[in-house]
Each structure stands twice: as structure tokens, then as C-alpha cells.
Image (cartoon, rainbow, N blue to C red; front, side, top):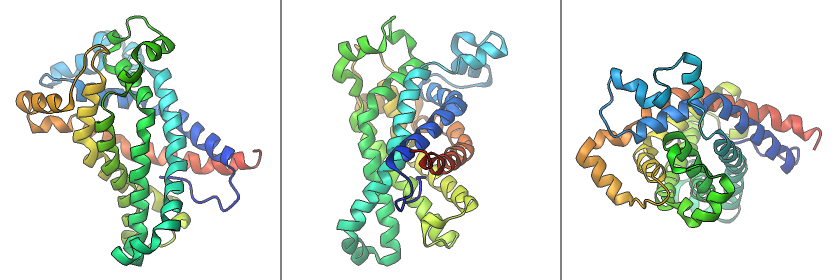
Amino acid sequence: MSPPPSNGKDSGAARILGSGTSGIAELLIFHPVDTVAKRLMSNKSTVSFSTLGPIIFRDAASKPVLTKFLSLFPGLGYAAGYKVAQRVYKFGGQPWFNDLINKNYKTQFTNTFGERKGKMMMQATAGSLTGIGEVVLLPLDALKIKRQVNPEAFKGRGVIRIFMEEGTTLYRGWGWTMARNAPGSFALFGASAVTKEYVLGVSDYSKATWTQNFIASIAGAVASITVAAPLDTVKTRIQNANFEKKVHGVTVVKDLIKHEGFGAFFKGLTPKILVVGPKLVFSYTLAQSLIPLFSKYV
């Protein structure tokens, strides 16, 4: 999921440029699928073949195919800011946390889990810490989701005015976001490490081949999305409400169980999992290719 250790070859600027460019390219290709998933998670009515179109395409449901497709790109500006910042942070943050844990707590992990499992637990724990830290990007994520599923909340206001007027409102759902990211990122990096170690027999993760990274990334991402799905649904519903409406997570959970059943916690899971493979392979491969390329110039 993250570029291999630089060993002094890849500069910080190259890592930022490479991962940032990867995030932009990933966004342009996969943003429509993300919009579909968010709208399905936010939908509270029964989903059927006849209602699927209006749920996904909203007002463009009866319009031409091109118009329908373009309707899946709301909030692209906010999504760009969020995705690029997230990729730069994730690609650089997890290795940094892993190095920090390895330097200061390796003995504790090794004594508790053993040499082999300790290494995997450090990878997973570093991923979890990285996921928790992503909460600082929550305002951009909240604006992206609102544009995708509740554009009326903006009422003609620009991003600067929204930041000035709403302030901490943009951090609604921060606790649920951290609660989702911690196990989600733990599963992401942990399952990836387990797959490389036990299934593929790779002991030095930085030397994994493209095919090995492909398989490990899919295993990690599917585990992460599945584990985080219930909390992600709650987080999305908190964030897509109007700015002036304060929605409590506990209320969302109670209403969801009462009116939609436990299965509603996994709304939008199928399109997410269907896009996991190509999305991770694309972003991972592109980042791996661009970072060394940019290192030649910066």
C-alpha cells in the first residue's frame, strides 16, 4: 500500500509528487464509483431495480447517458484536495510510523508476538496510527460527501465562506471517523503483511514483486473495507446532513437498526469491494513508478 523505504534514493519531494499525482489520477477514474457508494449508503429507502437509477443519478436519472455519467462527479474539487492530501499522508505516514515503532518498541512487539508476527503487528499498528491521524483531513472529506449526496447544504456558498462560517462543524463525526480508521487501517496493512508473509512467502516486504503486491493489496483492502463498513456508513450519514443540523452517531445507529435493519450497515459495500482490486493496483503501481521518476529531478 505504501512505497518501499527510500534507502536515501527517493527524496521527500519525490514521494510527495509521486503519491500526489497517483492520488489525482486515481480520483479522476474512481470518483464516480465512490459517489455511487456514498449515495447508496445515504439512501434510507428500499433499493430495487426501479429505484436504483434515481438513487444513483438523482435528477439526471432520466437524462442522456453522458449527463448521467457527469452527474457522478459532484464535489470533485473537494475530493481532489482530500484524495491528494490523503494519499501523500498515507504513503508517507505509515512507513514513518513503522520506522518509529521499529526504533522504539521493536523489543516489546518481538517479546509479545515473536519475531515474525511482531513484524506484521508493527506494520498493522503503524497503519492504525496513520488511519487515526487522517482525522485532520475530515473537513475536506465532509465537504466532498456533502457535494456528492446533499448539494443543497451549500446554498451557493464557496469553500472559503463555508470554512469561515462553519468552523468546527466540519469536524462532525470525528470520533466515528477515528473509530472507523483505526481498525480499518489496521486490517489494511495487517492483512497485506499476513498475505505476503504466510501466503506468498515474502519476508522482506520492500522486495515484493508487482504480482505479490497486487495479491496482498487486494487482501488488505477487502479486509479493511469490510471491517470498517458499519462505522463508515454511520460516519457518512453524520457528514451528509445539513450544516445547521447536528446529528449524533448514536441516533444514526438507532434509527438505522430500527428502520432499515442491521444489513443497512453494509450498504455500498459491494461497489466498494468491486473497485478495490483495480483501484489499489492502479494507485500502487503508479506511485511506485512515479516516485523513482521524480527522484531524478527533485
